[in-house]
Image (cartoon, rainbow, N blue to C red; front, side, top):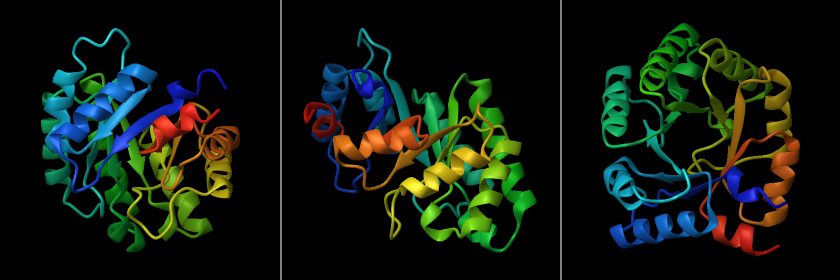
Length: 219
C-alpha cells in the first residue's frame, strides 16, 4: 500500500517522553511523510517549531482531557484553546466516560459540540476518543450517535491506556453506525503493517500508533 504513511498519526504520548524524543518523532514524520504527529499538550509549541519548514503538510495533533476524559468542560475548552494557540491543527478529545456511564448523554453531546465549534472556528479538526474497551454494543452505538449529532470529524477507538486498544470488529461496527462523512481513527496496540492494513480495510481512515516507522518500513 503505497499511500500508507498518509493514514498514520505518528504518536508519542509516553509520560517519560523527552524533548529529544519529540525531535526524533518530527524527523521521522518528515522523512516518511506521515499524515500527522500526535504529542502531549506540553510539546505542541515545540512540535510546531520543528515542523515549521517541512515541505509536506504534517498535521499537529494533541490530546485533550487525556487519558481519563473526566475533566470538566471548562477545563477541556481551556486545554483545547491553549493547544490551538500553540499550533495544534487536530484535537483528540477523550469523551467523559464517567458521565457517559451515568447516561448523561445530553451533557456529553453539548460538551463535544462546544469543542467542535471551537476547533472548526480555528480551522482545526476534532477527534473524539470513545474508549471502546469500556463500551458494550449499546454503548458503542450510543457514543457513535452522539458524536455524529455533534458533527465531529473523527471518532477514535482508544487512548492506548485502557485494558484493550482497537479491535477490528469494533471498527467495522463503528463504520456501520457512523455517517460516511465522519471518519474513524483506530489506535491502541497497532504495531505491524498487517494490522494497519486490516484496520484500514475494516473502515479506519487514520491509524494512531507509536510504531509508524516500523509499519511503513516492514513491507
